Image (cartoon, rainbow, N blue to C red; front, side, top):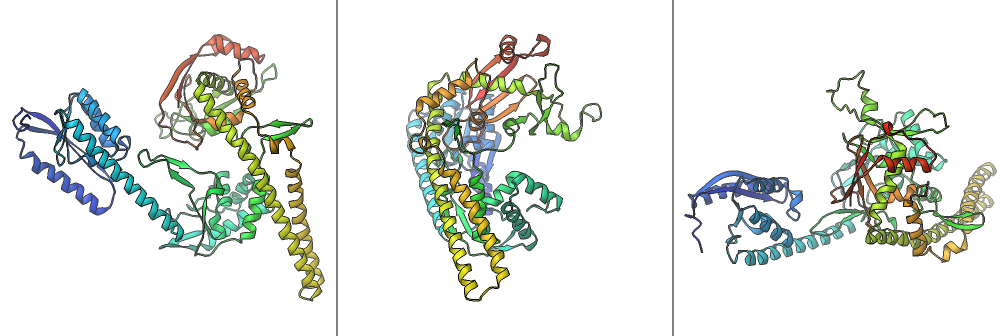
Amino acid sequence: MKNHQTVGNRKVVFYGRVSTEHEEQTYALGNQMQWYEELKKNYPNWIIIERYVDDGITGTQAKKRPEFMRMIDDAKMGKFDLIVTREVARFARNTVECLEITRQLKNYGVEVFFVQDGIWTTESEGEMILTIRAMVAQEESRKMSERIKAGQAISRKNGVLYGNGNLLGYDRVGDTYVINQEQAETVRMIFDLYESGLGVQAIRNELIKRERKNSSGLIKWDSTRILRCLKNTIYKGVMAYNKSHRNNFLEQKVIVNHDETTYEYVAATFEPIISEEQWEHCKLIRESKRNLRIVNVDGKAKMQFLGVHKSGNVWTKKLRCRCGSSMRMDKWRPKLNGERPVGYKCYNQLNKGVNKIVNRESEGFCDMRAICGWKLEMMVKAVFRKVWKDSELLEDAIKIFMAETVMEQQDIERIRNEYRLEIKKISEKAERLIEMRLNGEIDRDTYLRLKANVNADKEYAEQKLLGYENLPRVAQSHPFSKEQIKKHLLEFISTNSTNYDENIIDKFVTQIRVESETEFSWYLSFNVEVDVNLEKKLYCAFTIPFKDALRYRNKRKQLLRQNQYKELKLYVYI
């Protein structure tokens, strides 16, 4: 074994990390750095180049540690030849990743010294010992993850509050919520307006008109914020848990759970803002607005993918400008042939002004040109043609649709049962009104007014139930086959097809980043779970030349001159 104290001058860096931002841990990090300085006295041949410190960051994934990643980049550039770290657990808790990184560093001519473990990675037994130590560290992470989950389960059972308390209608005081009367009035207003028949967009406009403030104290509302309020069980006095989870203790990716039936519900100890009856009634209204994927066309059952109608233009939801802003759809002037083209423009430019009246150096200014709508439609077909050549990815898409088709049948029956229960409750309420009138508890005018309200509620519920009862029987008993779904997906990408299914775009396209007028990054997801993570690998890159664009336009009987088109370059990430 070589003597590392006399082997010659070494260009050395220190790496330290603590896993929380608690004060005592931050203090421990200072001790780590001091400990490294003391260690250096034993190695006179060390020349300290840099110190890399990740403060308050988990060790299960290297890519989430910015200083660690900076150190790897510097190693690649040959800035040093030795990394000194206290122990394997400070370096990585993922066995595979630990070994891959140390091997990668070895290729760069960089050795790692794990001081307390006594491991030098270039020595003959170094990798074997490192493997064992890293496995132990990974197992400790797994056990810690299980302990945390067990603690969270107990917390949920006890109704512990999560989050920072920025919840419309409540102020967080210690470990509980106290009603904020002014904000609570806004919450009641949202539920009352929705129950009266207004949609979320109309409610948004009404709140702005009445100058009602959101939880941040701003008169700023959108449909998502209002719908989130309508779905939040906390307003009826029930805490909902299991809305999201981590996929595993190593990758730590957040998976959003959209299936409300799998939430864990616990009665809250604080005062509700609205009644349970009103909350449930609003839920029935929400459910009734679902756009079921199985529809009756000319007496035949037809499939409409993805079931739930999502408001808004699909492209405005997916497009992001290179400046980070969302984009808005604009309808352009009709052409001589009657075509009414649309384009998508960066909101920053719309809000800040155009080149003629705004200095280019102004903060937040963006000079991205508008994107033609037909180009997006052409691109999405080209992207999925490339992707679905991969039979595994096509199979993944089919599996998602198969699973959702079966789920739709369950949803239909669940909604039917909810309306039947609602009708039963309304009937019981009508009977109680009759008893109260016969017993002289209410006068004739009050009875007639309440009876009219009850009859209206019952008629509404019966009409909605009738709509669900009349759905085609074939849809109830025979989910669509794998072959039918595959045919639909392949028709979507056909060069002969002039239509496109927005639901497919909505489902599989996570985001489209407009890098320039001619370059676009498409982020796709084929996971059963909702995936909004943009940290994906480049799957392919290709261009759409003029001849392909001309063919696309000709199919639609639309003109395209060569000087009107610049070759598009697409990057697809999965």
